[in-house]
Image (cartoon, rainbow, N blue to C red; front, side, top):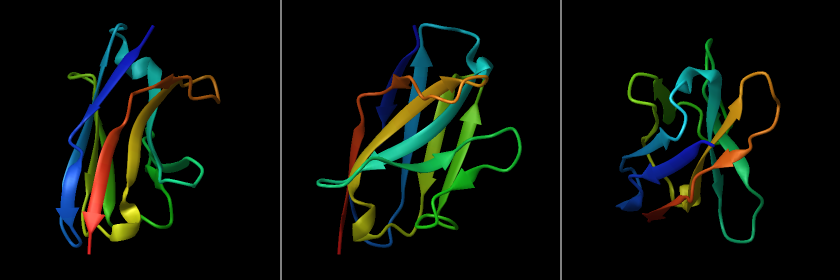
Length: 118
């Protein structure tokens, strides 16, 4: 069983930056997992923000050019660097994992809240 714990959320003014972290525990062969960041704002559906891949990572159009996802296998940690934050980035951010040979994200963290004020 893989456990994911996010950190790094908080409140920031528009134009600011935050770096989210997601540390995995419970299964040591971390590179077996494909990782992603999702977010959910009140009253909206959860959306994929960034997906880490062996090749180029993929991003939601709304964050492309502003957010960078990265993965440190040695530390079993996933990061999301968020620059030029906008009020519409306000949401709960979740780290998720799936076995790379499976399409479904089945492991989720508890979420970390990001609030961007104008």
